[in-house]
Length: 537
Image 1 (cartoon, rainbow, N blue to C red):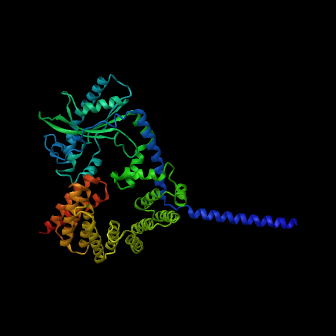
Image 2: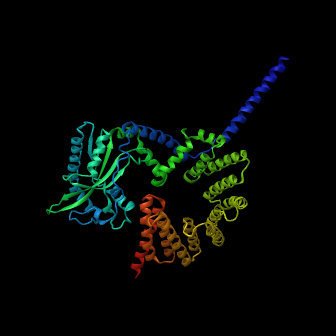
Image 3: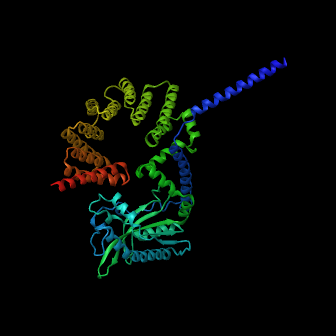
């Protein structure tokens, strides 16, 4: 009997061990396998969110009435026009033509600027009856020539009138750090509405208390134009940068290394700074106050019942991290939720669409089309043949046919989408701009350049009517037209249109955006081709 009990105990121990191993194996299957790059990204997110929370709390403590956030810097200087009056001048008063002329002017401007800034600080102290020992005025050395050259070439090479060096406003720079909110407000008042003794004009101002940086840093960033005497008894104008900080916010930022997070995410998203705030808001919503790490993702992908958060997670995995398997796992979780609610057809179609988009990003075109065909079947049955959703799915399938160089099939589906939109939308609806642009791309890929140009022109007219002449889609349409000319060997026409489009993209997307960099690269290539043709003739 004792031997039987011992044998039973041994058997139970073995069974427990096997069960534990099986449980561990199942758990291991549930843990998402993430790349080292994504692991670092998730770690940085946690640090960023904590930093942002502390920076926001510090500002709330220092300025409970939000006087700084509500300070109107003046719409007339918020987005200055790129006119000759605002170009940096050489010592003889003409627009600078080279980096050496800019630095020659900057050397003379620096001591004048420093005196003006110090007078400004003295006036603030006099007006506020405050001469706080903690206030700081710092004048930086002239901006490094190498960095200035890079900025002129990368950010302002296409700005008209040129050259790029004439738009560098931060060669001469300094900062003021005040200890109180009242001092900052008074300083901005004096800058915005200077008295008769002022020796400067405010030409540009940014209120980052109203629109903080990604990491939550807040300050005022302004540019002032000053008059500088030259050696001949005349004078010239020079624009200098001035940053105005709050000491409590600046000290906390330094302690938390907040700029480190900004630089990381700016680099991660290829400099698309315009979308950084939106992306980080997505992450905060996905995390819902918890630390975004492997353990949290496991919970999200196995137990989450929030469709909206999962949808955001899919977009982030797919479009920004390139973690396609994780995106598919999140889609699987949506299928589970959908099943719990009775597999509503339209809900299924939305998930199929997410799966298709993920396959498309992976360039698995056949799989993507297979899922989009499931989407279209449901939409036709549930919504009818004239639904806007049906038209958009036709458009999405056509885009994939374009990728497969199946232009005839693509045009057929663009045509179906177009016919539906014509029935249900006004003729100038913005969606026609998208369809016409896509058709232009398809005709261009087919070598039918005249037809492509015609569709691009139609697209541009619709986009301008809906969004104005300076919208990024207008810039991209110009670039597409330029490429259409380039492929025909019409390099002069191409260059002119490319420059026009790139200028708009630069203003709307910023110099570091991938579209801008690609367009600038094409411009360099076009100029080389034109140069070679001139040499040959």
